[in-house]
Image (tube, rainbow, N blue to C red):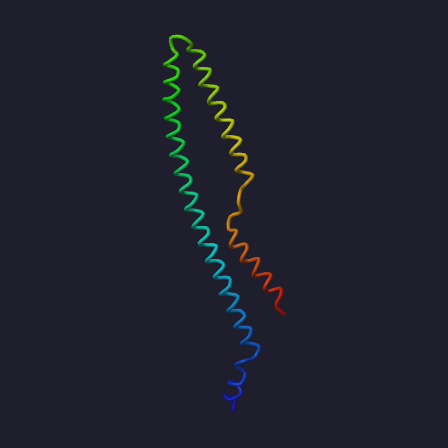
Length: 131
């Protein structure tokens, strides 16, 4: 008879609590997997950007160095000081443009893990709607 009573209680509060706990764990697991995927994507994107930036900077520096030497060599006999001043002014203007662009990009920074945060927000909203 004790066995018959145990089979009738399978749909009780403890089962509902266990299912709710399982659902919450599965929900948290899926959100953590999403965060993990986004973190990996951000890491790969940052690595690629770093390699591209360093390569671009190195190549641009070589190009500017040889262009500067060429300009100064062309005017060495006639106006060497004007040529050196012109090349220096060119670099100062470029540096100012780069600094302004960097400041603008820092202000436009996007939020990392935006999709994960949005999913957590939807989860919280859905849990608050349910009784």
